[in-house]
Amino acid sequence: SQQGEEDPQALSIQEGENATMNCSYKTSINNLQWYRQNSGRGLVHLILIRSNEREKHSGRLRVTLDTSKKSSSLLITASRAADTASYFCATANNNNDMRFGAGTRLTVKP
Amino acid sequence: SQTIHQWPATLVQPVGSPLSLECTVEGTSNPNLYWYRQAAGRGLQLLFYSVGIGQISSEVPQNLSASRPQDRQFILSSKKLLLSDSGFYLCAWSGQGAGQPQHFGDGTRLSIL
Image (cartoon, chains in turn green, purple):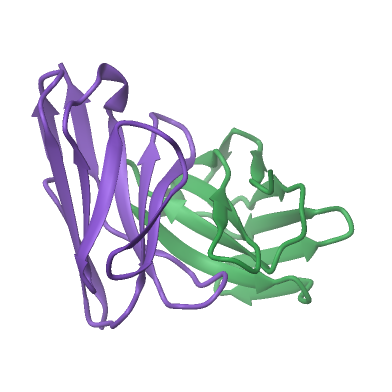
Protein backbone atom coordinates (compact mmCIF):
# COMPACT_ATOMS: atom_id res chain seq x y z
CA SER A 1 0.00 0.00 0.00
CA GLN A 2 1.22 3.49 -0.71
CA GLN A 3 -0.78 4.90 2.20
CA GLY A 4 1.09 7.50 4.20
CA GLU A 5 1.66 6.96 7.89
CA GLU A 6 2.08 9.97 10.13
CA ASP A 7 4.27 10.17 13.16
CA PRO A 8 3.66 11.05 15.94
CA GLN A 9 -0.01 10.19 16.36
CA ALA A 10 -0.39 13.10 18.77
CA LEU A 11 1.72 16.15 19.56
CA SER A 12 1.23 18.78 22.25
CA ILE A 13 3.30 21.98 22.31
CA GLN A 14 3.22 25.50 23.69
CA GLU A 15 2.28 28.48 21.57
CA GLY A 16 5.34 29.89 19.85
CA GLU A 17 7.13 26.55 19.56
CA ASN A 18 7.68 24.74 16.28
CA ALA A 19 5.72 21.60 15.42
CA THR A 20 7.19 18.85 13.25
CA MET A 21 5.14 16.01 11.85
CA ASN A 22 6.47 13.17 9.75
CA CYS A 23 4.99 10.97 7.07
CA SER A 24 6.31 7.72 5.61
CA TYR A 25 5.02 5.81 2.61
CA LYS A 26 5.82 2.63 0.75
CA THR A 27 5.56 3.00 -3.03
CA SER A 28 6.49 5.45 -5.79
CA ILE A 29 4.52 8.66 -5.83
CA ASN A 30 3.66 11.50 -8.19
CA ASN A 31 3.30 13.97 -5.35
CA LEU A 32 2.63 14.20 -1.63
CA GLN A 33 0.13 16.55 -0.05
CA TRP A 34 -0.57 17.78 3.44
CA TYR A 35 -4.06 18.56 4.72
CA ARG A 36 -5.47 20.01 7.90
CA GLN A 37 -8.74 19.05 9.59
CA ASN A 38 -10.41 20.95 12.38
CA SER A 39 -12.58 18.84 14.63
CA GLY A 40 -15.84 17.84 12.94
CA ARG A 41 -15.00 19.57 9.66
CA GLY A 42 -13.73 18.62 6.25
CA LEU A 43 -10.07 18.54 5.28
CA VAL A 44 -8.36 21.62 3.91
CA HIS A 45 -5.49 21.31 1.45
CA LEU A 46 -2.32 23.00 2.75
CA ILE A 47 0.53 22.25 0.40
CA LEU A 48 1.61 19.91 -2.41
CA ILE A 49 5.16 18.81 -3.07
CA ARG A 50 6.05 16.97 -6.27
CA SER A 51 8.30 13.93 -6.36
CA ASN A 52 11.09 15.94 -8.00
CA GLU A 53 11.01 18.65 -5.32
CA ARG A 54 12.84 18.47 -2.00
CA GLU A 55 11.46 21.41 -0.06
CA LYS A 56 8.55 23.80 -0.26
CA HIS A 57 7.40 26.75 1.82
CA SER A 58 4.04 28.40 2.34
CA GLY A 59 3.84 31.04 5.04
CA ARG A 60 4.73 29.36 8.34
CA LEU A 61 4.66 25.92 6.72
CA ARG A 62 7.74 24.11 5.48
CA VAL A 63 7.49 20.72 3.81
CA THR A 64 10.37 18.44 2.90
CA LEU A 65 10.34 15.31 0.79
CA ASP A 66 12.99 12.58 0.68
CA THR A 67 12.00 10.07 -2.00
CA SER A 68 15.01 7.85 -1.23
CA LYS A 69 13.68 7.36 2.30
CA LYS A 70 10.04 7.59 1.21
CA SER A 71 9.35 10.19 3.87
CA SER A 72 8.12 13.75 4.25
CA SER A 73 7.94 16.22 7.09
CA LEU A 74 5.68 19.17 7.82
CA LEU A 75 7.09 21.93 9.99
CA ILE A 76 4.85 24.63 11.42
CA THR A 77 6.92 27.48 12.81
CA ALA A 78 5.89 29.82 15.62
CA SER A 79 2.75 27.82 16.32
CA ARG A 80 -0.49 29.43 17.44
CA ALA A 81 -3.46 28.06 19.36
CA ALA A 82 -5.42 28.28 16.09
CA ASP A 83 -3.07 25.68 14.57
CA THR A 84 -4.68 23.05 16.81
CA ALA A 85 -6.06 20.45 14.39
CA SER A 86 -5.31 17.07 12.85
CA TYR A 87 -2.81 17.01 10.02
CA PHE A 88 -2.82 14.36 7.30
CA CYS A 89 -0.38 13.46 4.59
CA ALA A 90 -1.70 12.01 1.35
CA THR A 91 0.25 10.31 -1.40
CA ALA A 92 -0.78 10.47 -5.04
CA ASN A 93 0.42 8.18 -7.81
CA ASN A 94 0.02 8.62 -11.55
CA ASN A 95 -3.55 7.36 -11.51
CA ASN A 96 -6.56 8.91 -9.81
CA ASP A 97 -5.42 7.32 -6.60
CA MET A 98 -4.74 9.28 -3.42
CA ARG A 99 -4.21 7.63 -0.04
CA PHE A 100 -4.45 9.37 3.31
CA GLY A 101 -2.65 8.48 6.50
CA ALA A 102 -4.26 8.30 9.94
CA GLY A 103 -3.09 11.80 10.85
CA THR A 104 -1.27 13.61 13.64
CA ARG A 105 -3.39 15.40 16.25
CA LEU A 106 -1.66 18.66 17.10
CA THR A 107 -2.58 20.59 20.24
CA VAL A 108 -1.08 24.05 20.71
CA LYS A 109 -1.51 25.35 24.25
CA PRO A 110 -1.89 29.11 24.69
CA SER B 1 -14.75 30.40 -6.97
CA GLN B 2 -15.51 26.75 -6.44
CA THR B 3 -17.62 25.53 -3.54
CA ILE B 4 -18.79 22.14 -2.40
CA HIS B 5 -22.00 21.51 -0.50
CA GLN B 6 -22.73 18.40 1.48
CA TRP B 7 -25.88 17.64 3.42
CA PRO B 8 -27.22 16.87 5.90
CA ALA B 9 -24.59 17.77 8.50
CA THR B 10 -25.84 15.15 10.94
CA LEU B 11 -28.15 12.19 10.51
CA VAL B 12 -29.49 9.57 12.89
CA GLN B 13 -30.96 6.51 11.24
CA PRO B 14 -32.27 3.15 12.50
CA VAL B 15 -30.64 -0.09 11.41
CA GLY B 16 -32.17 -1.36 8.20
CA SER B 17 -33.34 2.02 6.96
CA PRO B 18 -32.26 3.49 3.59
CA LEU B 19 -29.71 6.25 3.17
CA SER B 20 -29.16 9.07 0.71
CA LEU B 21 -26.39 11.63 1.15
CA GLU B 22 -25.96 14.31 -1.46
CA CYS B 23 -22.98 16.36 -2.54
CA THR B 24 -22.91 19.14 -5.12
CA VAL B 25 -20.09 21.23 -6.49
CA GLU B 26 -20.32 24.73 -7.91
CA GLY B 27 -17.93 26.77 -9.98
CA THR B 28 -16.15 24.01 -11.85
CA SER B 29 -16.91 21.60 -14.67
CA ASN B 30 -16.14 17.89 -15.03
CA PRO B 31 -14.59 17.45 -11.60
CA ASN B 32 -13.42 14.18 -10.14
CA LEU B 33 -15.70 13.38 -7.20
CA TYR B 34 -14.98 11.27 -4.13
CA TRP B 35 -16.78 9.75 -1.14
CA TYR B 36 -14.74 8.95 1.97
CA ARG B 37 -15.61 7.55 5.38
CA GLN B 38 -13.65 8.54 8.46
CA ALA B 39 -13.86 6.55 11.71
CA ALA B 40 -13.40 8.56 14.91
CA GLY B 41 -9.79 9.70 15.29
CA ARG B 42 -8.70 7.87 12.16
CA GLY B 43 -7.73 8.53 8.59
CA LEU B 44 -9.90 8.53 5.51
CA GLN B 45 -11.13 5.42 3.75
CA LEU B 46 -11.93 5.97 0.09
CA LEU B 47 -15.34 4.48 -0.72
CA PHE B 48 -16.08 5.62 -4.29
CA TYR B 49 -14.69 7.96 -6.89
CA SER B 50 -16.03 9.21 -10.19
CA VAL B 51 -14.29 10.77 -13.18
CA GLY B 52 -17.51 11.54 -15.07
CA ILE B 53 -21.29 11.21 -15.24
CA GLY B 54 -22.35 7.63 -14.65
CA GLN B 55 -18.74 6.49 -14.06
CA ILE B 56 -18.29 5.09 -10.56
CA SER B 57 -15.34 3.17 -9.15
CA SER B 58 -15.77 1.31 -5.89
CA GLU B 59 -12.85 0.84 -3.58
CA VAL B 60 -14.38 -1.23 -0.81
CA PRO B 61 -17.12 -3.88 -1.17
CA GLN B 62 -19.99 -3.01 1.14
CA ASN B 63 -23.68 -2.30 1.25
CA LEU B 64 -23.19 1.27 0.04
CA SER B 65 -23.50 2.51 -3.53
CA ALA B 66 -22.80 5.79 -5.30
CA SER B 67 -24.28 7.51 -8.30
CA ARG B 68 -23.43 10.57 -10.36
CA PRO B 69 -26.59 11.61 -12.20
CA GLN B 70 -25.23 15.04 -13.14
CA ASP B 71 -21.75 16.44 -13.70
CA ARG B 72 -21.54 18.15 -10.32
CA GLN B 73 -23.77 15.90 -8.21
CA PHE B 74 -22.60 12.85 -6.29
CA ILE B 75 -24.93 10.72 -4.19
CA LEU B 76 -24.10 8.06 -1.61
CA SER B 77 -26.86 5.53 -0.94
CA SER B 78 -27.75 2.41 0.92
CA LYS B 79 -30.86 0.26 0.79
CA LYS B 80 -30.40 -1.08 4.34
CA LEU B 81 -28.04 0.50 6.84
CA LEU B 82 -25.91 -1.56 9.22
CA LEU B 83 -24.55 -0.52 12.60
CA SER B 84 -21.08 -0.59 11.06
CA ASP B 85 -22.08 2.16 8.61
CA SER B 86 -21.84 4.74 11.39
CA GLY B 87 -19.15 7.31 10.78
CA PHE B 88 -18.20 10.64 9.31
CA TYR B 89 -18.78 10.79 5.55
CA LEU B 90 -16.86 13.29 3.47
CA CYS B 91 -17.36 14.31 -0.14
CA ALA B 92 -14.52 15.87 -2.11
CA TRP B 93 -13.78 17.12 -5.60
CA SER B 94 -10.61 17.63 -7.58
CA GLY B 95 -9.64 18.76 -11.02
CA GLN B 96 -9.01 16.21 -13.73
CA GLY B 97 -5.53 14.77 -13.84
CA ALA B 98 -3.48 12.62 -11.54
CA GLY B 99 -2.66 13.87 -8.06
CA GLN B 100 -4.74 17.03 -8.06
CA PRO B 101 -5.47 18.58 -4.64
CA GLN B 102 -8.83 17.58 -3.24
CA HIS B 103 -11.37 20.00 -1.80
CA PHE B 104 -13.68 18.70 0.88
CA GLY B 105 -17.18 19.38 2.08
CA ASP B 106 -17.88 19.70 5.78
CA GLY B 107 -19.06 16.14 6.12
CA THR B 108 -22.09 14.25 7.39
CA ARG B 109 -21.97 12.59 10.77
CA LEU B 110 -24.08 9.44 10.48
CA SER B 111 -25.20 7.57 13.57
CA ILE B 112 -26.99 4.25 13.25
CA LEU B 113 -29.19 3.17 16.15
